[in-house]
Image (tube, rainbow, N blue to C red; front, side, top):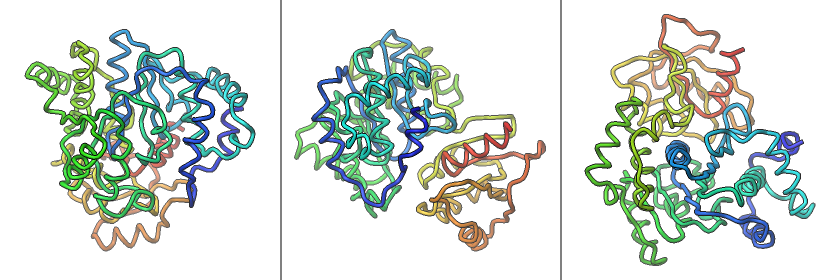
Length: 382
């Protein structure tokens, strides 16, 4: 069984063998027949950008796959094709096929993300016109970077996963942006160091680099505003939409606003109920985007954090919209001990308690990670 197989693979490694994925792919690439690949790298907004673009392409008549991660409730949320998550039965069949292609040693050594990347690409193979391929936490050494792509989309780059990517914006940008192969479209970046790295890569690799605004004419801007108004998109979601539309412009694909309606991924400032918003964001950049979108209101924050996250900075950013914090228990070895979180909350002067139930008279924001939203949904939906 696929799920049992994946459950036996560790999600995180202290050390990563960056040569493994390219080495394995070089041996088995004859089994893949891949179409136009659009690779998405960056820190925030990869999933929503990918879903905007993949939904639009599918609605325009292209067979389109979207590989995203992580999932919230079910594994097959990661592998989407032509409007739906691929059924577990079809993924099970693809898994059995993949096991015949890989050697037992390769099967054993591939990480969870590496294996699921091969699984998704094998499923998309021979049946797709476009594959929207979202990087995991990395760039240059990410499992998704081994496949030849036609275009790279660059979402906002900020600090995240510093233990793997580097402890400065410049270092993180170098790691992520080294994944660019031929052509890239970048959103407006907050940090000059990101633009500096983009310029260095453009010179050293002779890539073609576009800024989003270079590909958006007056008609596109009008359509973006219309879509954003129709779907009540927060500013950062509007930025993701603009990047997706810039990609269509690059490929000279005509579109109408309607093909983007209701296309964003669940868990991105999603209104679960009238008084409950859920968001899978988990870093300072996501927190800043949420504050911009929700300013003027106060929420009970249902929260927890991984210990490798700068949760004190995140809470400090969110403080203007926090009424109080309810800490929700999640089972994960990476979760910060409550005593550390409590100390940070006390230092910031934010009142807190354990999460127990939803009061219909209060406004709630569920935020902190995919695991926080997953745990909340399981509790809330019983």
